[in-house]
Length: 473
Image: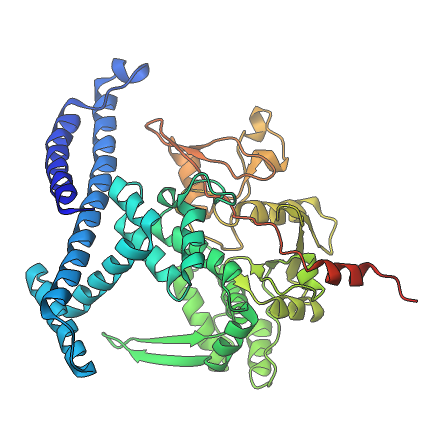
């Protein structure tokens, strides 16, 4: 973007704001039932106005990033070459301080803006173009900067293309980045990065395991934070087991919230007591804590693992439900331990789609619930990240109206969005065996659900495959 383009963009933003007021006051143009109901037309106009102001916010953020990057480069040129590392540091501090004063923000915020703006305008052209067009937000752009950190140029461009180029060979399933709330986009971008990182996930995981720790931070009002940095399977198992224990304690006589019961249960387990959870679970957990080997968690978790990775032929990551990519060694250990609550999922080597779910029970209801969790990945309501084990199976077309109990007529919304469906005019759309249902709002707008982003597994080199298929002499 040159100076003239920046001026044109600024002028266009001013015109857009003026036009926006007209759109809101007159209501969005509509056809059919909207024309016959002026109030609905006004409601639609306000929603259209909100959507448009978000696009204008993104365009304004793009202009701000361009100005920040331009100022940084111009100030560096004006200062001239630094004579020493100390001079260079001083020049950077001066630039950051100037931006902080001009924007009335902290120097930390100003430094982050300058750094992110530089990356966006020099290394992430697709992201910056999408921000200029208003198709992604500033939060999405910052996430892209974060997730491409330490990737080489080729890796960063591949991540960009996967989420922002509709013509990419292996583009993201479902909607592009702008169609996901930022938190969900971060999860998907991190997952893609883990799968395609040039450094083996086994090596990166080994570094992380060495850094495992427990942290304590005092807070206000006589409270404190206690957090643990743990391997993903251990942390996921603790969380899901705690949730299951808390759910078991809920009832008419329990006035604590689920979050409060979780906290009380964990505190009781760690302090060796038996309150807050069942006596059997609490004492069992306490007795196992001193063991040098952390036990495999018993909460029900799906582990999606490419069969060749399970055999040790490739080292591509497995997927832990509710978390994301994990090292294949972790997946193999979970299966070798016979962890009865971890259900193995094999995937099609052609496209990464699920083939079957390993199970120990022939109960159809249990298998269907597991398939729904695999198909949807989470509550299918747009933007909801609820991975809890107690998401509720729900007939899209009610059983009383002739709906079947097949996978294509089932959703698995969380309790909140299940209630939303049955107490408001929000309705799910049709689903398939491989795609979760979308949603139609009370105003008639359609919102797509997020799709799991399957990818074809990595195939080993031909000589490795041949060795596997060779019969022993």
